[in-house]
Amino acid sequence: MKKNMNNYEKLSGAEGFEQYYRSLFGKRWEKIKEAFAGENQAVEYNVPGSQSPYFLDSASVLAALCLPLDNSEDILDLCAAPGGKTVVIASRMPKNAKLSSNERSPERKHRLSVVVKTCLPDEISERITTSCSDGAKWCTRQTQCFDRILLDAPCSSERHVIESQKYLKLWSLSRIKTVTTEQWALLSSAFRLLKHDGYLLYSTCALCPQENDGMIERLYKKFNKNSESFEIIAPSPDINEIRQFCKEIKLPPFEKTQYGYIVMPDVAVGAGPIYFSLIHKKVK
Image 1: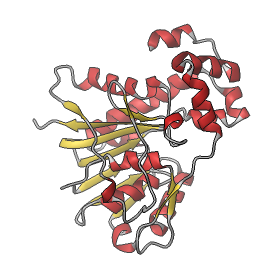
Image 2 (image 1 turned 90 degrees about the vertical axis):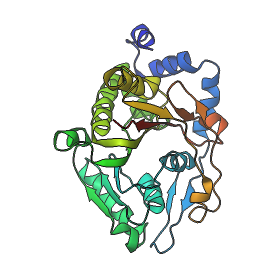
Image 3 (image 1 turned 180 degrees about the vertical axis):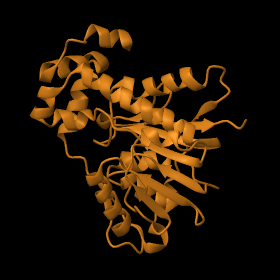
């Protein structure tokens, strides 16, 4: 993939965006664009006792459902705004568990706090702490303190780029390099925050492989040189866990990648894209 980036490093703008993603997906790119242009029906996630439901992509529900929460006590959503995945996780967490939901943007953190207050009942929201800080720096203050972590990392979000002439005009491969630098800082921090025998779910809404499998490959090179630190786990989402909150949902299909899985909108009735990889930190 690095070779591909070097080959296309001078591409920019709408034309460069088109050429680059066509090089990645070939003829499938047209079907992906058609799916982007269609309407993606959000699903209603309604936790009994809350003031209002939350509407989100079924692929986002799937990703949050893939983080196993059995026997968890300390859970972290490191980049939590606007709050959809926090709602899904919170509705599933054990009654004695606590959830820390963090967002670095003050404006987005405010929205997150409102979602926690209005889309979850008091008996759940009172066990959630919202914070506003840079998740990449958390590991400088503490390590190995959460047994479950969701990192829904900031990403290129091609679905939003392709819908905006402004963002298409500004697109370049240098943006991908900037984003992956940010993602790596967050992922390496999250891995250090994870307890041994804990689970970390890394996810993005990107199509770009550098932001998906590329991040997990980098994690292998840094922390898993002898395959002793962590392993990739095949997810086993159980729709029955959330059926009472989201009665009409049908979980979208997902495809295997080298280190994870991805929901592709062209075969998921417009849902996604969502990439996710489930990491189990081994017991020492």
